[in-house]
Length: 148
Image (cartoon, one colour):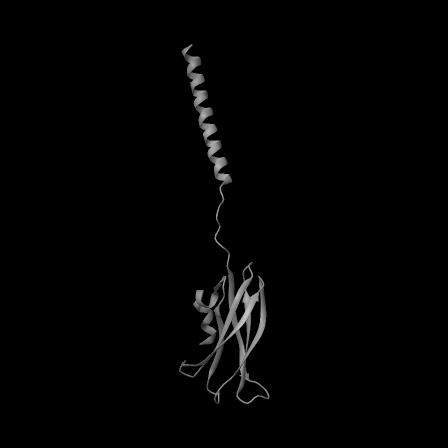
């Protein structure tokens, strides 16, 4: 009889362990798992800048804003900068670009008056800020090489 009772005790232990494991796995599957918030991936590509036709001292900056993520980018602010030959910043202008759909790009322009002859100056634009994104110009510094 001892052989039968050892077998029943072993079966009971296996059943208890199996039940405990099933309850543990069930509780794990019902827990809410927090995933990190997905952010937009924004980059501003400078196109060109120059004098605005018909306006004395009027200048125009042209650029593309791109969102590489599957999330809409919100409250994007683009900054265009005018520098001299020594990379001293002469003027900064900002524009609230607004929102940009996921996986898209949009062309835009920014206008301003510039105080003097700009023959020896450089201009460029970049993403200054946005509310739910990573700014690729700061995250991947090599993207800025085209501005040098």
